[in-house]
Length: 233
Ligand code: F6R
Image (cartoon, rainbow, N blue to C red; front, side, top):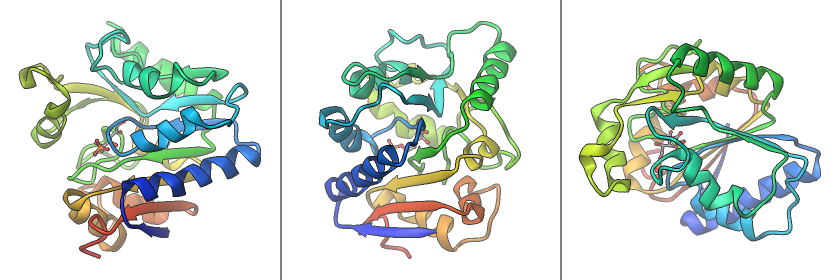
């Protein structure tokens, strides 16, 4: 694991932006993308840069079940707002949270992933060590699947909802094996509330109780973390 320590999220966005500049200059064609607060400053920089994404395919990690792309709380909407409405991509994929046939939604996304192997996967991390919506206890062998969100994740995500009781309780997520299949992984984490998860990810045992701990086994992982997130290392 390569660990890059930064003072704050703004510096983290600058560092991660450099990684994207280099990746695109080196011909990267498939980006695995994440939502949440951690990548927002990076997306702002990508969106206002002169980088060309017209030959790039993006594949997002996850989506709430029950929300369609026009719902402002959906991850499709988030991605449109922060990046896709501002930059032309060749194709953008987000799991289909509105597909009534869940098995089909899962199968279709695995097909998409097999057709578009991810070159560079961006990750945030949950306070409980989740990556994507792969909560503690998720099998390291998992591919795309339907997830029951834990109360800790529902609580953490309630801040994005006007009515906290409207936070969906299920999601569709790329699995941990799908994340690990990416050629390169970049995880960004900022703030003290990520410190325990970061310490467990880097120094803890590799256990399904801390999904991100599997990253210790990936051959090309970079972590960009600020001082607060690094405070328990
Ligand atoms: C979102 C996702 C989640 C977030 C994680 C951290 O697509 O995959 O795993 O990365 O919950 O969220 P923030 O960045 O809001 O702290």
